[in-house]
Image (cartoon, rainbow, N blue to C red; front, top):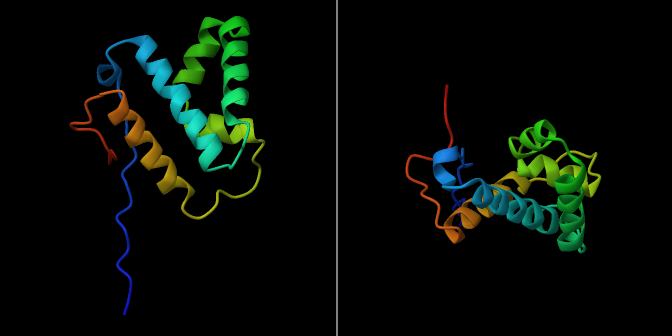
Length: 119
């Protein structure tokens, strides 16, 4: 008997309309970074690493640096914080997409019309 493959969650393409406020966007971003760091990259100290890095960003990064950070992928930020230089493990992106979607639901963000955008 062959196992049925579980559907792979679609990545969310979040827009400013999805968040409602800049603070909500930041909270969502850091939640996804922390969960990705802990789950995908198996970093036991994810909460403190993310908290310390966020404080450093808030204190030391210029406005342009912060804009660049918040427009980057939480996955990339988590990988950098983990010091990850290997290939991304099988299933890691699917896990990340699930983390993204769950965080969006927890924050009550509208996911209507969101998902993988094709060109």
